[in-house]
Image (cartoon, rainbow, N blue to C red; front, side, top):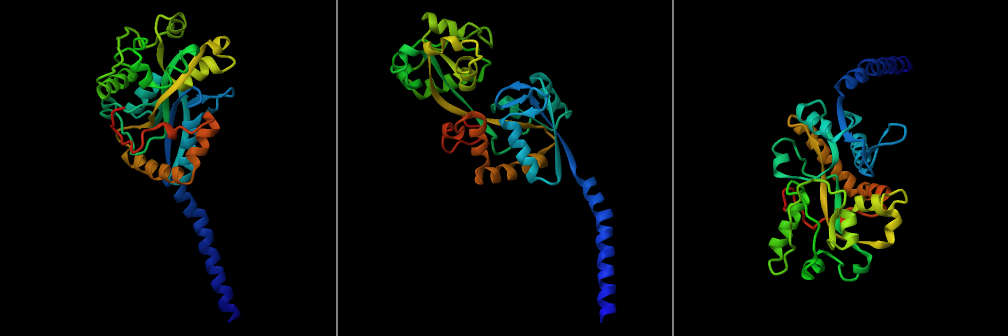
Amino acid sequence: MKKFVAKTAAIVSTIALGATVFGIGAFAEDVQKVVAAHTNYYVPYDFADENGESDGYEVAVLKAVDELLPQYEFEFVPTTDDDLLIGVESGKYDVGTKGVWWTQARSETYIFPKNYIGASIIGILTRAEDADKYTDLESFAADGGRLVPIAPQNAQYNIVTNFNTAHPDTPIELAAADQFQLSDAYQWVLEGRYDAYFEIKTSYENNVVNENGEYHELADKFAYAEYEGIPTWPLFNSENQELADAYDEAIEQLKADGTLEKLAKEYFGYSLFDFVPEGYQIGDEL
């Protein structure tokens, strides 16, 4: 009986050793490398730290996704906006994150997963003296406030257009800017040329709240009122539907176990998801 047990143990050990030598090697060969690009400057969404290492909220979420997907191994590459977009489209990168919003045009080039990764909060930057008067976009519109022009190719232009459609009695006068970026917008509000600038909250925080911000010395002159959270998405190469589906499964788990909420508060100091309209579905007009 002891000899039988010994022989059985030896066989099991041999099988285990073979699994160790061949099984793990085979498994390692089955692991698919995923090249994940992200913008190298967009704090706190996606950036490269002082050591050149990939960091940011969206990067941290993708790293958490990677932990839940043993069949994939993510490699993170900091890069520029243009390289990211072109690279994901061409297949140089499998997925890219840059705090991007959904648009119909983008959905024809890239795969958008079912689940968004975060949100970009937008609102109005006003003069501090008007903080009680302009508590939200509705009160700004009802008062006939003057909004800094927005370039038609900017997604915020569509958001104001949609707002006006929903509020036909109190629309916001929307002028088209001839430039995407308006470097003088903050100054125009201070001077009274306009009453508000439709701005992303993180940009306001970086420019005004941050002690190194360009307008930090004038922080007491500005106020900010949130309007809505616009979901942000990772962009997948058009051939990577299987990867996008795996991402969706992982992100749902991270949402359910509180990881997304925890990471949002770690990188932003507040929840991003409280600002996204309840019941939002991909393709919804915001």
